[in-house]
Length: 114
Length: 115
Image (cartoon, rainbow over the protein chains, first blue to last red):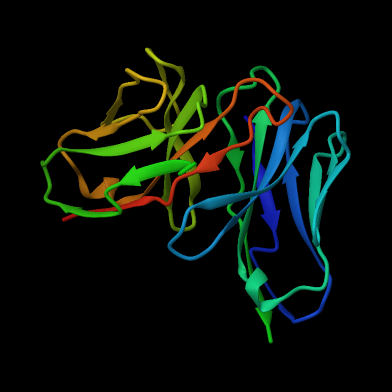
């Protein structure tokens, strides 16, 4: 059974700092991995999707990497801003089918202090 | 596009009552999902559908039912509500083919309290 772990559970940093969020998974047979952002009381917003054949994806100040063999993904946020404060979740989709069950981590709650 | 739309946003039910959470998407996505999110427990898949007329159970289907009569709509029905069903419910959808296959798009959530 796939298990997804996100460390740390919470992170507080000063504005302007570069930071890395970690996501690890136990079964390397994945179809893709997706990073989400969730603001309090809101739904999940897709940030980056990495297919299993890719090593990284970039969007603005965000860069996500994937190392399937070691079961790890990182989300790098450059020059953090108070508006980046949210919970960040990663989710993996199994390789045996492209359409069904994702396994979510429990998230990292990020606070960026002005 | 409105994306994924869920109604209602908030609802309080009494034990034993029934209700339907509505979900509709206007992105012509094949796949639709219902998740529940409990504090400290992450997101758990309740039911999913790979297309109109096809549904399947997820991790925590007990106490729920779904239908998928159209591509756009995927309602979730709670029968005989129990306090254990107090949660935030999220509907999501994704494409089956294309360069971003499997990218999930979520609705804003429906917060349900059962008293």
